[in-house]
Length: 266
Image (cartoon, rainbow, N blue to C red; front, side, top):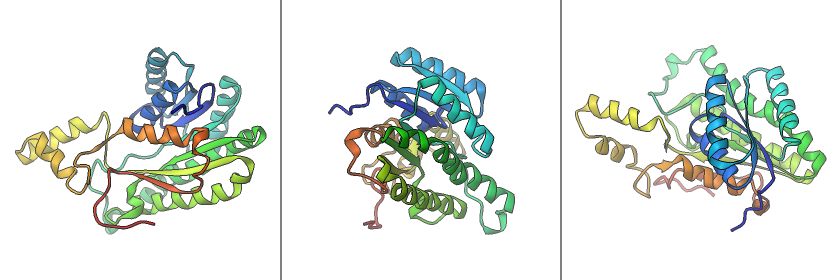
């Protein structure tokens, strides 16, 4: 299938590592020129250089702190200047989850809660707020918000709240921006294999006195495909949602956890 992405221009926040980088890579392989953004200038520069070499597309690295309005405004202004416009926004800049036990009620401070929500929920809102006018002026755009399956299950109070909030943000934006030609969707990864997975699995295996394979089987015990989903497989879904071919999907959530057993969502 031709995704009709050749020549499109995208901004991927959280694009220097993990799922964000995998998304940037797949978009570039589909012919998209990109700005990838994150807080660490060294990480952004390395990722941009490596992706440009691999894909042959224009990849520009910019720094951003999505907690700060002025930083986000500068990012979008810089993106438009670098690419000549902006067609696609992928919001993936967030504090990582799932790498340590989530805090219990007594451990959740105001600062911990607001810092997490400010980066992900308000960060996504800030970036969409700056990007949408450029898309509306062109009459076409795509915004994809990377959230997570904590929106559909308990176990992490802050994780569930922030991810449900991203879903609510997505639907509100879709209703407002859809008539302007901008589709907005949310993707819910589950526990996903990234470059951080192998060392984390190895550490847990050593601590438990079992093999890394046993730890991976435990992690995927509730996944119907029987293994962890890879970040590249998340990127495949996002590339479709970023394309003109996805016009029938707006305001909805796509779960990418490999099929979690039990709950029915409709």
